[in-house]
Length: 488
Image (cartoon, rainbow, N blue to C red; front, side, top):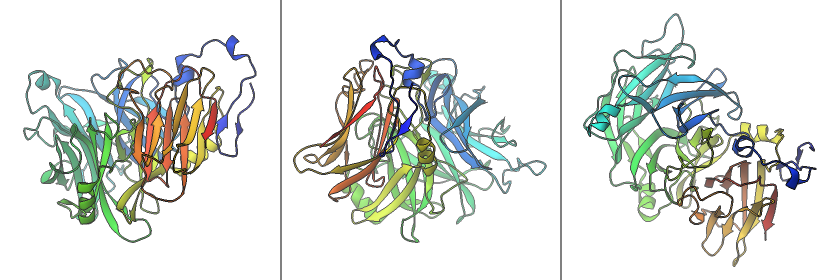
């Protein structure tokens, strides 16, 4: 085999000298296991949970069912990384118990020991999660979900559940889950954003144990194709200014811009009690339909890391790279699903109003530039440039020796970016997987389009116009994509 080499476009390719017709068929592991996206060694995974940074390590917990490759009794799996690309997986962090399954949630580093869990000078880490009682669900009761906590004194490696759980009882709301907690310096308290069916409820606590209801947001705001889930509330500095705005993420399933699961966002202000939409953003929201973190079909339930932000005030983010339309049917069997590449979330103010941006973290780009693999496939980080034509599509085609292809680019007639995975390989496992092309709007009018692509064995992540439009989608070719052609 020839060694990997780096094209000027920053894409990694390997060529095989052997006759491909004489080569045995690739194993599922070799063909589909991501090269640099996190995926569990075995079994089912969905939402990222409990993400925090401490002493040079990024911790990632995740919804996990260790006994099958479809959704089941939820645990918290655990992995960590120094660069958000190379991950080490650990034993299960949290197991179901008599109170129920361990659904999604968050974790914080309690530097001031407000919880009182710290001992002998050890800083506690506190996880906040949803207990989901299956016996109550089977009995068709409403108060199925409550909020609980656990603490760690060894930097997130082992956990002790709080004896006083639950810390928030169910207020007779059936879908009442996914607590995301941050420390608010302005109000000097912990703030929780919690999904409550068709709105987000906010709570406050001085110690992570005793919580008081503050307010809610939603009902008539945003998209309601499905239940609201996995909220995340945090402040962001507006690029190029000293202005601070608050951003709220809310995932919905279904109801995404191209079908199935997706994550919407809102921009406003938070005063320690209420989240209120920015007036200009509220007007934009009434007239537009495009406030999505990612327009592709495969980025759901994403949230940001705690206890770290960039020098420019931006946040770090990761999402579940799948879609509930077909997540349990995709053609991998030893494991199911992966996480997106880690991203830096920013906020800009344009003539069109506030817009979220997200781009791959610099650590990922540096790692990919030095990547070495032993598989016959196109991989890595590639810079993209398109000259917009007024009449025809411009873009790229990824292809393989079997004639399968993935096409992506810009359609000037629709004024949309697009991804076409309809003939990119296996898709008969679900009629919802590739019924049509996916589209995303463009938010600038510059003649030339700049972008970048993160390409792994079964996923593409496209970042157009400095991350103003992002599309993430998965695919399952029967042979690796090993050629890229520009459409001009």
